[in-house]
Every structure is written in structure tokens, then in C-alpha cells.
Length: 386
Ligand code: SF4
Image (cartoon, rainbow, N blue to C red):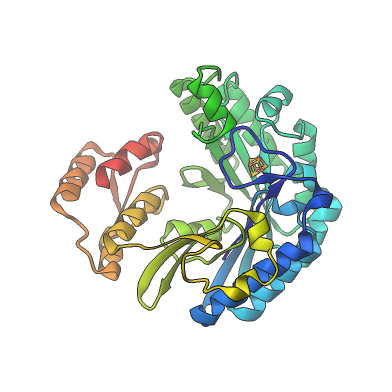
């Protein structure tokens, strides 16, 4: 289950997630919870009973949400599904809205995992990224999550920012890891077309890190975390034993997930057909009283702006694309057989054989994986198998 919370205190210039800037006092905390619960109830009418392994509150900034409102949504979800005894409940948190009190309140509301968007530990770089917190704010938030929140804590870092040395990327990963987090995600700064950074880049007014600097930052982070006993289990993700993000792994393995909330994406199997949908992106429409009681949530309209069947061939390509980002790789034949399609059309087969010859693809059990020394070039390798 993915629940999207669409508000943030400000819009970061690199961010292309669906988020709307708002003051905390102006956010309709309880009304949004009620609308999400209304959507949930309508969707489960058709979906029926399913087993739920994880809930991910993403955004936006879900740590801005009043914990009582978030807890109400979680209670409704728990009541309508058969839940795994060790249900993973992640809440994404921004340092500007996470202290001891909030971490404890989220834990008490049912969160089992907090994920803190630290992004960096350098004041100028944080300013460049449009973040509202300083390095101390990021560190304090992680300490609060570790001290007062649930047992599992993750942090996000961005590397490959212009002016950032590989050594800084490495030291920041080490500093965060030493605070006691159990999981860390490290992403290279990417410039997305629809963002403020995208516009500046088009006009040639955004400084950019070189590819070599980005690669060195990636290797620096990896070294710091491997030395500290973290396992590099996905290209951008590291975890201590037993602490992988189960929600994300489920998605990367091609699992179904129900998306709730403004702009949420979901992928479910209904009557044997695999469907992908995206909810409407305008909070006011989503919040309109009774909105979800008037519509069929499994059809396209103002509340569900996209709804499309995913052909089996496309589903297999997506599973290869996501599975090859994982150290465990992907069992292409098993996935193809479950989907009823040919795993190795001639072109993919010849690309596979070539990649195996070059050592850019390896066998793991009955599946295939990209050896970690080639992860820096994973996009190009995966593209050959599409
Ligand atoms: S806080 Fe996160 S979701 Fe919100 S604008 Fe910044 S990067 Fe995007």
C-alpha cells in the first residue's frame, strides 16, 4: 500500500514528485485522512480481501501530517486487509518536521520505520538544493528518529551535487551511518525537465557535476557503507542485515500495490488483468466532500486521471528493468512463465548472451543479475535487454 501526502513546506528546485507548498496550519489534516479512507473503502469494495505486507506513506512530506490523522488512515487500512504480523509501515520525514516528540508520535501511530530526507551535511549545498534545514537540522532529525522513533530508521542522501567532492559524499554517508540508521538510500542528483533546475539547465544556467565526479561520489558512499557493514542490495540502497525496505523490494520484484491519495500511482491485478492507475493531482478535487462515493474508483474520471492495462510483455520488461537494479537480480524465466510470455525473444537473447560474455551480466541461482562492479553502467546494460 502506498499513501501519498501531497504537501511540503516549500518546493525544492530539483524535485519532480507531486508536492504543493503549504504552511502546516493550512493543510486539511483530518479532511485529507477522511478522503483517503473514503478512497480506500471504495477501492476495496471491488478488490476484496488481500494480504498486506507493507504500507508506505510518501510524499510530499508525510511527517507534516498530524500523527493522529495518519494513524486514522493506518487503522482503516489495518481493519480492511489481512495484514502480515510484521507489517512494515514507513513514513517519509523531512528534518523540518521531525523531532523527538514527532518521532514518538509517529511510532505510537503505528509507524515501524522512519525515512529521513537528510540529503546532505553541507550548509551551502543544502541551500543550493533549496532545503529549508541546515546540517544540524538533518543530524538532529536522524538522532530523534533513532532515539524516539521505531526500531528501523533510514536516511536519504544526494550525491553528485556540483562542488561536492567524493570525499564529502563518503564522509556524509559515514556520519549518518554512525548515528545508528539501519538503512540508507543514496541518489545522484538528477535534473528533471519539469523542475526549476530543469529550466535553469535548459538555459545553461545550472552548474552540473561531471560524470566522473558523480561516479566517484557513488563509489565514496559505497565504500563508507560497506566498511560499516551495510549491504548494497539495490543500486541506490544499502541496509544492515534484516533491514531492507520491504515495501520497495516488493515493488522492484513486480508486486502489486494499491496507491491512495492525490496523484498516487497503483498497480493491481483485477479479474486476472494487470492494471496501472494514477489518481488526479489536484488536492481540492480529491478533498471535495463525497467525491469518492460518487465514482467508480476503477474507471477513468476526474479523480483517476490514468488507468491502463499493462500487457504481459510490458510487465516482463518492467520486472527485468527493476529486478536488475537488485543484487539478487531477477529470474527472467520464472517471471515470464508467471506472465505467460516468451522470456527470450531473439533480440533480448542475443543481448543477454553478449552481456554474459562481457561479464556485465551474471547468473545468480536460476536468474540473472548485474555484477555490482558494473552498477554504474546499469542503465545502459538494462536498456539492451528491453
Ligand atoms: S521536501 Fe521532498 S517531496 Fe517536498 S519538494 Fe522537497 S524533495 Fe520534493
